[in-house]
Length: 148
Image (cartoon, rainbow, N blue to C red; front, side, top):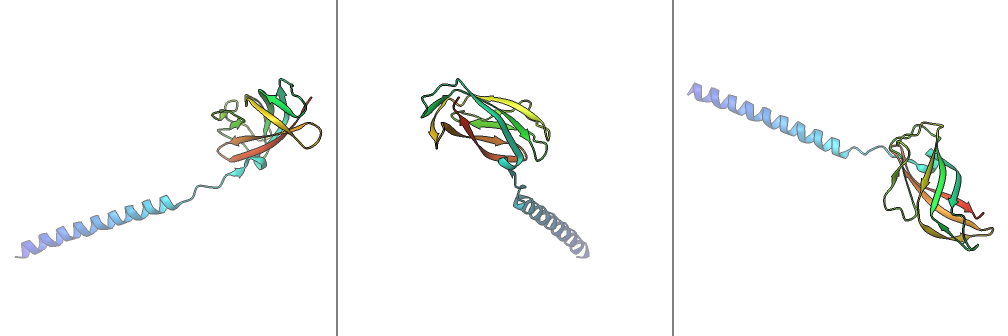
């Protein structure tokens, strides 16, 4: 009888230990799934766009046909990794250069939005939003283009 009791105590101890291990795993998995990824910065705070130009420079004053759009992107808040750009009717975002822009560095980008834009306001200005995505920031940056 003493032998059976000793065996049942050992089995019970093993089951309790297994239950404790399973509970610890469930708690750890639950904690990990509840962690929120860090919030990304706004692209307009992290990047600067300059030197925007479009080609061909045709239009009738109230609209422009935007086939090619070129501009420089500068990382102003820090290094930017996995940088993608998208605007207009582009089906997918395109990788900018090798995907990395160091803080203070500018990279020239040419995109092919294939859009016809209406003029806004006075002076033949045209508005387009450029979407930027990176590991550190994402969002849209508005550009005002002037007809030449």
